[in-house]
Image (cartoon, rainbow, N blue to C red):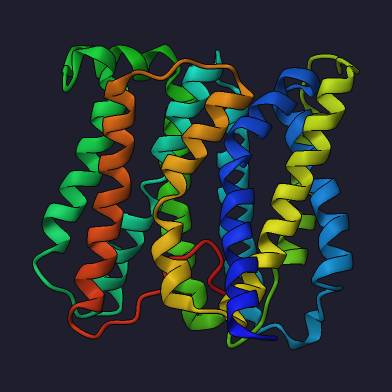
Length: 304
């Protein structure tokens, strides 16, 4: 496949992923947080079976099968439920932004665990990312600790799960890079996520499904964004310009906020956009701090 075409496919994956925050929230409004997430990952698993293929478990390293699947399932559950349990569209977008701390965390973890070479640019990069999240959570008050605390305490479950997800995904990216040995377990991991969510759905009280056309459309779009997004990203990483794709992936928070605001009909303030830009630029600075000294970290969304 020509490199330009593969790169374009990879960029389409970034666009698809950017729509996930708004779509997951929309699906959860119709089918409930757990039921909606279970439906999304079930449909995405079916799409991946046709696009990526059936996983060959016999070729998986045992450590990758166990550790990779646990980390992946935990992350996807944290991501989907943190969005599903939000109280409104604006809060869902804020929670999604907290999750986007994972690129900076991945770089930091790679430096600590793998002794990845880096420049001092990583320090202001991390500070800028964290400050961006604070700016987002502070609302119109800016960096008001009381406002940040009030926002978080309004829904500690969602914000806590989003932050936990960011940490888990950073660990996943660094760990699976070492133990996957070329294996791609994305289809299996999606299936395990769906099974886990259905078990939770069956074992705990859940709200009744609201069968509306909008909910079904959002479910179809969310499943395609998830399933086709991962499939397209794999094509881009294998055959496209990895540098272009890596750099572009750091602007997902901005694109995601634009799409989520449209999907959820939410008004976002200037302060929010300032914080979003800070998160993206901080992550980009962290990534560049390793490239400047010849490093090759891989903090992208899929790193098997």
